[in-house]
Length: 88
Image (cartoon, rainbow, N blue to C red):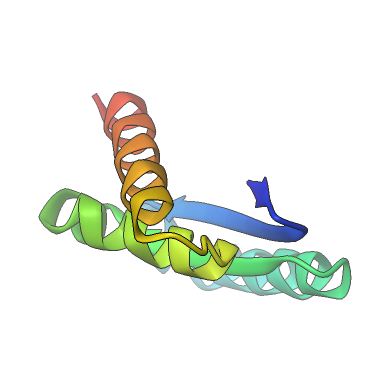
């Protein structure tokens, strides 16, 4: 996701799959690579997304530096709906 010159990579990690040490190592390598390109990397577990989709979305909006509270809400809702659609 990019907004206002900022780039954020949002990862939704399935808890069963992403517990494995080799997968975690690949995730860490991917995170380092994306950060080297200037991305902010945010990782959420499925449990976090299900429990608080708006809170997760707000973290994305904040990382993107949405300047206006209305933008933060709009981005939060859009991301939450996208994530929920992905999970359903």
